Image 1 (spheres, rainbow, N blue to C red):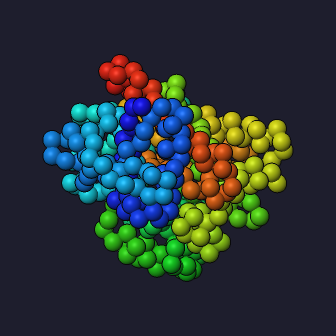
Image 2: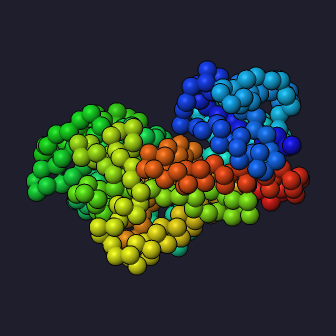
Image 3: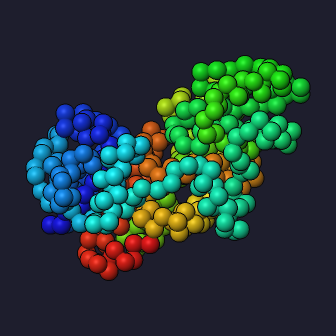
Length: 359
């Protein structure tokens, strides 16, 4: 049985060692691995020994992770998302010596937008996005009724502010702040909110609604056993009415996509809408992957308007996957584990040829 490395965040590893649950379903890796004749070795970059040949790996015993010193597997599925310089250095070294898929990539949302914009065929999916400046904010506020101000690097809705124009007043809506103000005060509020950090301004899309609330769509886009990008699942995330954020950690709610669009679209329109989302997500993944050939596992946040046209909100390079679980989409949830494992299987069994064809 060949071994596959599964590199996880430190907190996830610690929960696994204690036998506590996390958003990573460790038994799924083991179960799918058995079907594919692969044994998962779980570890964090800090578990790698000097020389990058051996690792204090961990194996799932049915209840928790137990340690064993082993050779580092030749193929590694990287699930670590960290800004820690030491951990990133280990991942970088391993990427030169092993086949690490979903290695280190540029996460700056502005740079990602620029990479995607280079492909004219996907520009229609990209909302107008620019680096934050007071001047650009004025331009956006004149042009669009809804504007987002968000960190260039960030996740789970932290630091995201939504601005809605209502006549001569503006609603400033964020996770822990909601107020109405005139333009001069709004500009001061946003300047203080940004506080000199790298932020973006993004055109707000008039999103479709479910039960009167806007929703966006988490799309899991992964490489499969044929090394092709495929959509493993789609689920709707319904916004919290107070902060207008759909992130589950910010009060959003996950529901099956078919449930969310049933009231707005006919059966034929629903099918067409999901086909459009799939086409857009795969095109975007291919373009992003041209810049980072190791990419194989993405979680995209996409929106649709009331006509079913898809728009990219942002790309996440580590989908936490639990929105599928929360929506009761168990088959999709498990598929998000299966496809990366099937992809790893092809890399393991094609040796050096697999490394050359990783892109």
